[in-house]
Structure formats: structure tokens, C-alpha cells
Image 1 (tube, rainbow, N blue to C red):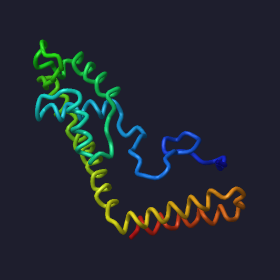
Image 2 (image 1 turned 120 degrees about the vertical axis):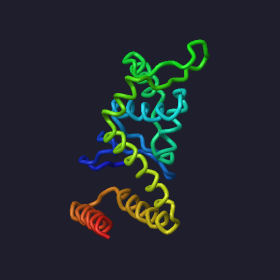
Image 3 (image 1 turned 45 degrees about the horizontal axis):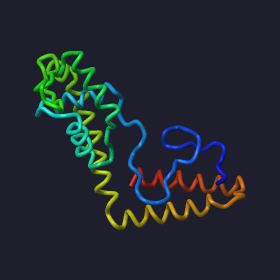
Image 4 (image 1 turned 45 degrees about the vertical axis):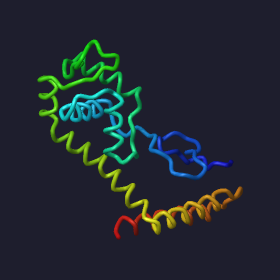
Length: 179
């Protein structure tokens, strides 16, 4: 597959963004580790939880559009425990459940606005999923992707044709933004 030299994937890396049809889950880094920790504190303020339950809580908030990996959750649980922001509920249990400590409550209180912003950001993803699932919207997105892929799959696209395509995409984005 020929690739235009200036193209990049959603994660900023050169190359094909991947996927042969079907909906892709968001793979790019959605949240910084410090934001993940704040979300974890937020969920632990509601109930004691295992790491897996925290992953599911974040995933549920975004309606499946973002799911933090165990590789980000578990090291951050360890860090929060070392920071004395959380503690293990039952040290003899085979699966560690964590609860918030007074220090964790303080961290959460100090970052209430950031937590609120994070929850809004992830909830917005859930709204996106709902609106993107409207059949007419799905059909229009599919039609645009199909047309774009067919055109870009042509081997020798002239610079003029490429610029026309780019302008059409920018114009469509502008119309969508201001509709």
C-alpha cells in the first residue's frame, strides 16, 4: 500500500493507522498516569475495589470507548499505596481490594476540578458512541470512509487531486463543526 509521505496515524506515528473495517477501540493514550490515579481515587471514594473493577469502572464511564490497560492500573495502584493514598482492605485475601485513606481523600479534594473534567471527558466519549450509533450517521460515515479509501487506494493520485480531496475534507469538517 502506497502511503503519502506526510501522513501520520492517530498516535502521531508515521504509517497506516490500521484496521480493515469494523469499529476500532481508541488505542491512543487518552489519559496521563496522574489522571488515571485521580480517577482511581474517585472510584475508590465510592467503594473499595480490585484493579479489574477499576478498569471496568473507567470503561463503563466511557461506554467502552476507553479502557485503561492492566499495565497502567496495577503499577498506579502500587504507587498510590506507597503514597498512602489507598490501602489494601484485607491483606490475607488472594485478590487485593483497595480503599481510600484520609490522605487519598485529601488528594481527591485538592483535585476536585480535575476529576470533574476527567469524568466529563470520558462521559463525552459515551455520548459520541450513542450519537455515532444512529443508523443514518453510521451509513454516512461508512459512505465517506469507503469513498475516501477507494480514492486513496489509487496508485498515482495527482497533487491537484490530492489537494482537492484535502480541501473537501476540510470543508466537510468545517460544516460539521458549525452545524
